[in-house]
Amino acid sequence: MKGRRLLMIPGPIEFEPDVLQAMGQATTSHVAADFIEVFGRALERMRQVFLCPGGQPFVVAGSGTLAMDMAASNLVEPGDHALVVSTGYFGERFAAILERYGAQVTMVRAPLGAAPALDEVEEALGQRDFKLVTVTHVDTSTGVLTDVKGVAALAQRYGALSVVDGVCATAAEECRQEEWGIDICLTASQKAIGTPPGLALLMASPRALEAWRRRKAPVANYYADWANWLPVMEAYEARKAAYFATPAVNLVAALDVSLGHILAEGLEARFRRHVRIGAACKEGIAALGLTQLAQPAVAAHTMTAPYYPAGIGPEVLKAILEAGVILAGGLHPEIKGRYFRIGHMGSVSDGDILATLGAVERGLAAAGYRFEAGAGVAAAQRELLRGS
Ligand code: PMP
Image (cartoon, rainbow, N blue to C red; front, side):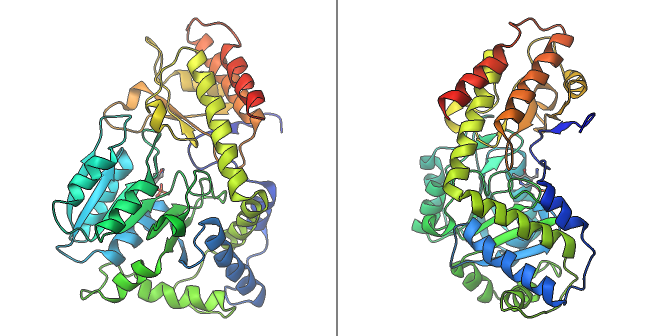
């Protein structure tokens, strides 16, 4: 479509036409037989996408922050100790949410662009009895990817529950919830899951549900309380209707279509595609002489966070927009104005990466940055051809 801009931010992403068509269908009753079937199937597909056949899915109207809130409010009782492995803005947010429910929070942080070593996480875990450990799979403010498998294994060894914020990762970065022993994996619809914003998605292990059942204090958040939602999720999966609060009927229909696409591609192929596309974007950016926030060993495959070159600032994003691609500015409060972010997850294609690098080159050229024209596109193309 002429005049259409390519949306390449780390969420919301671009959505498949049939996902958007599902949104646009006439809204039906939330207890209609056809909706019960769609919701039930979406819940079954959630288990497959999260690679968690024994988990309990929750699909609730809200955003990723509500999914974090749901994990914290259902697991934390006042005075519980929680360990937060923070690699940026969203780790700090998790700490704030946990504290709101009365948790005593200990942070394990790393310098900007790095991830804490597992040794440091283990050392913290050895200090006291933690009820739970949270870790952000990809922190969208830094583009740092964490070793959630390693953190979950440590949590298990020390008798703590593990909670993974997969908002910028789930259905794109390798994650095997059940095999890796992750107790809660949560995300939002608008990222690699590929459904417009508006759904909080969460998968709880039997261990997490058990911890919730054993709690003494009531859940301090009425809307997020699993006591309200569990019967609803169980009913729809058994192809029966139940009501606590009106589900987002059109979004659930869209989610079902999108989860179907993810399963048709296959998770292994999907993880590989994100590795390949992520590498192409990073090679392209590096070839233009731009450095990146995340250290290469811990760089996400779902997004890239380049620093602006010397003398260039956020105004370059406007020139990139004029060249047809929407990118995001910085988010981490310490360096907000010094870097920008490119999202490449979900149904992103090879062509999207080449178009993005082309637009970045146009924007940089307009801002007076000197580089060899086409160097970024060529490097990305080489990487795509190598990996195809
Ligand atoms: N965690 C991470 C890693 C995120 O990227 C985001 C959103 N960018 C959130 C949590 C919060 O999600 P939402 O904006 O949908 O509330």
